[in-house]
Image (cartoon, rainbow, N blue to C red; front, side):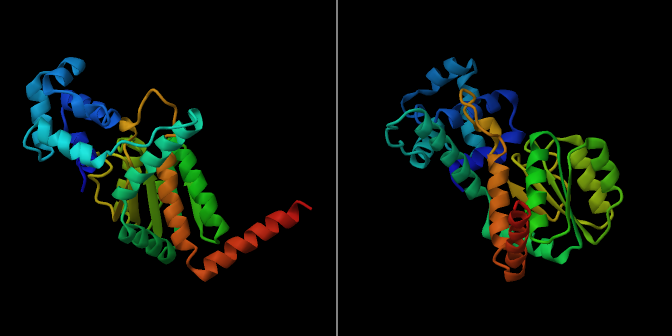
Length: 268
């Protein structure tokens, strides 16, 4: 596990001042190499001891040790030649590569196995996570799987109370603190359904639930706020991984091809 992953894993358990340090170093890793601990403390309006405590929480001896580990993990990128397009591309590349480090092939295999063994798949998400849930549902339906998504908080809670051991429930919450998603997975688990949590925050309320599978995304808190980015890109990346794995099944691949052919035929 590299130092940026260690920061993400520990972020939720940090105090507010340590979180401030975490967010700054994740967004400004390239510039940090030549900054002293006292300069950073002044930039962030925190005490040097806060930075030292932050470094030690991550298993580093001191700030210098932390910078060396961060620098080794963030080698300077090539100079961008053409402005905006390359800039946006570099940000998406970074976010996706960080998410890739958080999700294992074994976890994706476990999700696919659960989907094939269940009778009904329910995908829950609010706000932009709800859009990811709907995208996920459409892909599964095109493969012939029995999948539904829900974006209304009241309906999510009500529906989760009607689940059973033949259901698979997927809850998507970047913060891991969306009350309706947390309650829905609790309800589903109590009813014997298999549950999957997708979140960006280890040790969050969602992560602390007794779920069957956990899928972690890169934390949007570490995105550079000076630039607009689709905050659901990490969820969509994981959905892509699951989709591609499902399509290794010849029957599901045939189903989706048949669906596309019917859609195209219907346009003529």
